[in-house]
Image 1 (cartoon, one colour):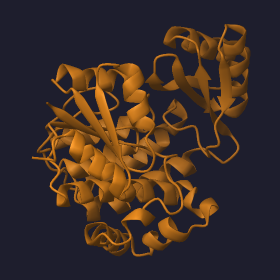
Image 2 (image 1 turned 180 degrees about the horizontal axis):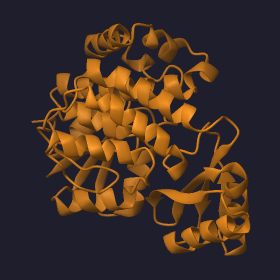
Image 3 (image 1 turned 180 degrees about the vertical axis):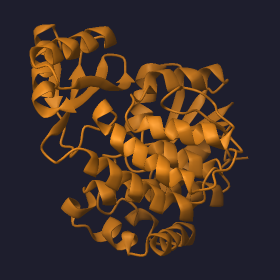
Image 4 (image 1 turned 90 degrees about the vertical axis):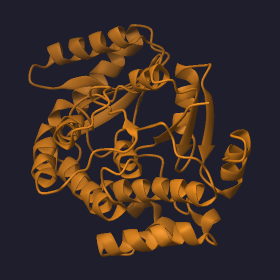
Length: 315
């Protein structure tokens, strides 16, 4: 058995997502470290909300990273094994990097806060949008985007998250996203639904955010990963810190190639994937992408115990 760990991105958060670990000292230690690194009580926001405040990008990104990392830390404290490889969806790549030793938790939490600020400020609220298109192949979605762009030159809409077969997220100028949804429906999409997000993440409109992020990363010291880390933007396993940083910069305004990431994990010999963090969205996507891959999701003590049992007690 060869195991990979995966970590979710923005949207997986919920108020109280770590409540089931209230008595777990390992998790509480992670929360204290995150609060100290950020200089504010992020743990209280995770536990108590309000949901509207937790949903703000600048809060969501550090909260999701901390929540996922806390579940991983609880796993290790319970005797769970380390993985052969790690990957994360969008923001989740930062959690994967933390697990792989590229960053410490104290470095990662303020970094993703700065990433979130850069992404939010790159495009004024209300200008950008995102939508999910279901039931079309990737090229048909790209074609719908091209047609929508051609209608109003200067407006952008692009396929940005290749999450699973026939499930693609698009992003760009809000009006162009709306036009692309109509084009996709006309082409036979089962659904084309706007997403409740505050910026057109991973579209070329976010290039200024990537440039700002690059300035932040240039002041940091990244380390070579101790575990194979598959990135989103190139679907590559990089070991040089400078190349890892470059990939993170481009990730801000480039597509998340999740279907290919899962295929890469399989090519590395992985036959079981464990997701750490609130919910089980990635576990579901992995199961759709590769039906032979065994999956678990760890988000509370019960699912942690079940995953350990599936893996033979973590021995």
